[in-house]
Length: 507
Image (cartoon, rainbow, N blue to C red):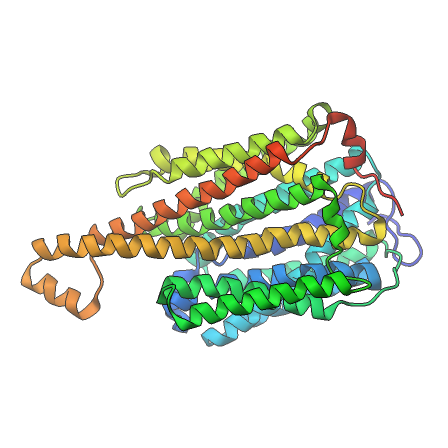
């Protein structure tokens, strides 16, 4: 192991590579946990008695606390020291994973997932800030950002692959247990390869964190309840009203706070605010793509858990390859062409996926658009990361990276809830048509079974699911199209500005 500085500092040379490995491993663990449970959801539902409606909260309980508390996590690293806060977040994540694996009820698992999100919210923004303070400005830091971006973008697909292997070969509980040894290893190595950052005096904006997080939770719940109970349901109206009040309160608190959790002056830079907008709409589509494709390949194409996981492996490979190429071409062309091109690539891929029907095949209808979407992600993640962190004072780098991650996680949760609503409306309409078609051909035994279960057999059931998935992909394509428009008309970054984007800090 490389030598260390007094107080746990990182050594030069080989220590840089090990430091990047530790930071990237933490980010991979955090990101893949968003999707690793997707493959296991049917098994979790059976084991713990989730209803179909409540099952989506296994994903949302994690992403909402993750996204909602990211800014507080970034601020904690700035105030208390990034290394110690980062290690605490990693250990909390590992403990919550252990509890999740041992869960015996639906409530226990959702609580464990929420705590996992808290640990991720503490560790993830600090990971990005540690790159900024560990690696030298220029090409070295740009390469580190490239690795980090590739891990962030490809982690979702890796999670699906790992989830499939763990569920098929072991048990659904191992999608949680697998995090425990990783978290312990990271926490043991980190003090030897990362030096502690300087503490910056300040206070925690708990009021801002709570109102912002609860506001987003209310907004997401409103969309999901609308899908279940309808837009006229009183609970839906109350949820949206609460979201408006809480989010309005959040803005007012942040404007009056001496040290807000969301420094609103960061949005004064059009490139940075445009970057946050692009990330928001990309995440809206990204979470939906993984969620609905996972349903489609298992329920319609009949893939096993491991086959479903393997089917997403090209996503991870494509993201990593394109992110690496993008990081090398950025000095020549600047980030804007990759933001625009990446957004258009994801839009075309999603529009292609919207053509999916019950006769679609993986090689003929899924792989091509999935690769287009992945190439777009690879282009966008590197350029968005560099742009969002440009010209940010070192004392606010944790908050800046937290805001970038917040837009991704909150955008993903919000986007998934909207797409679930679209899916529900389209599948309900299609179900009405398919019920008529089924009953016209059904035998007396089939009619009796349908009256008892209210479930359509295949292929009628497949048509219902496919209609909902197709509608969701159509709306997802509109999300990324908005991102392309922001990249084209808002972002104004020239190749000559790249020196600042590669890591210039002040303050």
